[in-house]
Image (cartoon, rainbow, N blue to C red; front, side, top):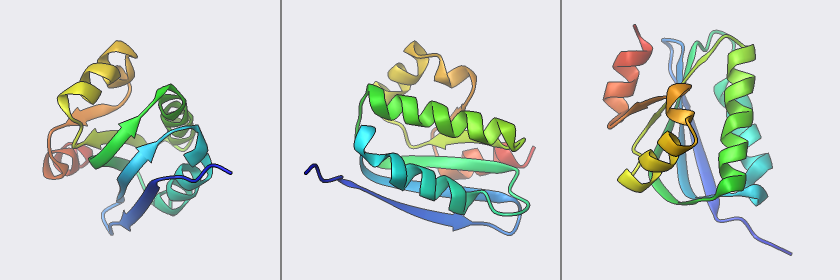
Length: 118
């Protein structure tokens, strides 16, 4: 049996912005954790979800696929998806996979929140 090394924390703001904090590894074994976090973040009037990767240890191709699934779900709900706290390595991965064209990338959470309010 494979164990997952990921925890998430969902913070729902009263301004229609939710933040999902990732701590650990995002891979194919974390699908249920990611989808549960997205459901929690997608409450009633949520118009933007920020993925906070400051404590991300590892992201593989299966994890990228799960992020695409979240992106599609967010688009169907007319929600913006933003990310913050990516290391230079993962910023490069987002650029290579062109995820940075669909997900707004910001250095800090406060920058992402400001962009989400526009």
